[in-house]
Image (cartoon, rainbow, N blue to C red; front, top):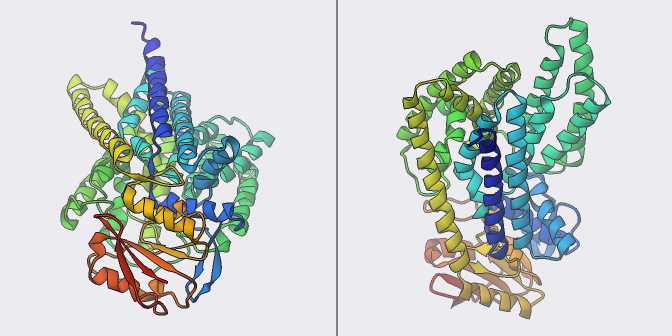
Length: 520
């Protein structure tokens, strides 16, 4: 076979797989993670004429009133893109989400393929890199759970990096790129801001290297002025309007994990280590490793990541690639270490470092092509194991969403409630216009069309809650609290006591797994 055909076969094959999976989730839409679920709640408020990016909900101090909050914690792209598809094609939220997933997965594949070729890798290395990336769990997750900003950022990053390595001189084109790229990237996900700064530093160094100091200053002005405009727009018209992950620091606290986790991020993100472990520190599922073992894994990964980065800087011939690795690895370490030491509300999750996991892949494959077959065989074994977990995740997750998850008005899969309970909730929603529904799941409010909704944070097994976040005063029509059966007992009583003006609770079993408490 002609070797030039192999890269094209890989890329077009991956694209065909994305489209095929996309058709399947268009027919049977996925579920949604909590972050984009909060965005969809804003979309629901906007559809009910609540104003741009404003979450309308009952006022905790007086349930007779509403409160309007500008949702600045997450950026709007995760719900505005599906909303655009809804308006354009007249489809439900679930199918609009499916179209969003197809579009941004394809944009990610082709953007990174072109970027990898731009920075000196052969088409074969670039294609094999995308094949390895597609094996990762983060790549297949959106087909089961819509991940919002994570997906949108993946679709945009390759094109952003391609632009960062394409300019050879300053000018209006560069100014336009800095302006548009900053706004689009933030629209996709707020964590793009540190990536944005790192990318602009790459452009500045590329254009100024081996030139007089005056030229460095001039180039800095060409880049810095539009970047400042972008950051000012983002701050004035978005971040300043409400709380965000960087607005609440708990004070300086030194810890080994605050240093080691950013250093370990290339391997933690690049080989799905954090994903497969359900989170080494911030747990997203059943805990796999104890805290001590997890910290040991992170420290070992930090040492190996440093070694790997040094090998890439020594042996990869392309100057642009080496520069990008230096800037992004250093930038990620400085930004997140400071954030973790200050105890900002940024979780210890490798997904925040996804860009580093993506950047190291072509470098690793290039190095393997220059070494003995034994190391390539080990890499192939690891890749196959990761791919197998991803295939199992997709097959079991899609089957569950299609055959077991409930579905309501949105068309989205609702895996945390069953269909009998959903049907009764929708029936009550149709019969009332002045009721309030209370959920402990962020995705269920999108199913309510005629009444107001309160979402309470789930209560952990330690029963530790801040009652100020739960207590709601006042009385305003019927109140329906929908809880899973596992909340029976203390958790259930804690929630019911959060509405002190309501009395005479009546419990109704909606199904084997869910109970509704009503106070009319």
